Image (cartoon, rainbow, N blue to C red):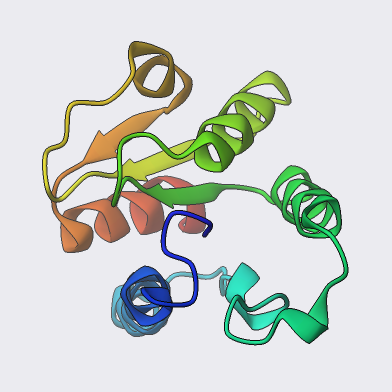
Length: 138
């Protein structure tokens, strides 16, 4: 989130909205018995309104809490040097939470980020089909 800040907020938030709407639509079409619950951290703490938080630690603690209480996280490598994304990936990996990556720009990623992801896709629809097949179907 920090990599995009207030001046690039919509750019960093657009993919989250797209994943959310596509995932629900594709889940319905697939007849998946499990209905996903998605969390967009930008809906809680927004860089457009810094009155919603007092410190960066508050945001970090919230993001880590939500990530570590999830069944799966999806990360988008819109930039290849996000320290927050790398930390979330590593923490979830250590806790056994599947991490699915999206790298549409085919950026060169740090080997540890690659290793900590269960799988990385360069196509959003293909990624969502995989999530539905392997994590939402019985």
